[in-house]
Image 1 (cartoon, rainbow, N blue to C red):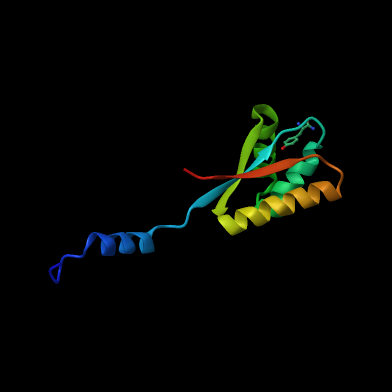
Image 2 (image 1 turned 30 degrees about the vertical axis):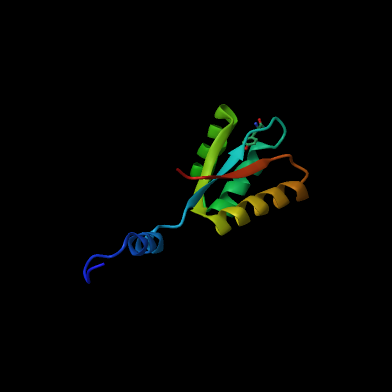
Length: 103
Ligand code: TYC
């Protein structure tokens, strides 16, 4: 190895170091029982949506089966999913939420 040419291993290490962290989509799932107002409340409470954005996402999920709430680093996405599931259970609703690696 010459002074100014890094080995493959070094190049790989540099690349690894600079790689952006993977991001994760938090996705809401439709069901027949959760009230629309509750879903809107969830989107405002946990995903920083205003009333209009929350209504849009909720209606998208209602019509299409799933919808994107937001995209976050792993730990934040995981926390949001847990918060939504806990809040839904506490209020007796079957609302489901999941996370998926963002491609
Ligand atoms: N489909 C539900 C209803 O008609 C409303 C709903 C919307 C439920 C979005 C879940 O993620 C959801 N009451």
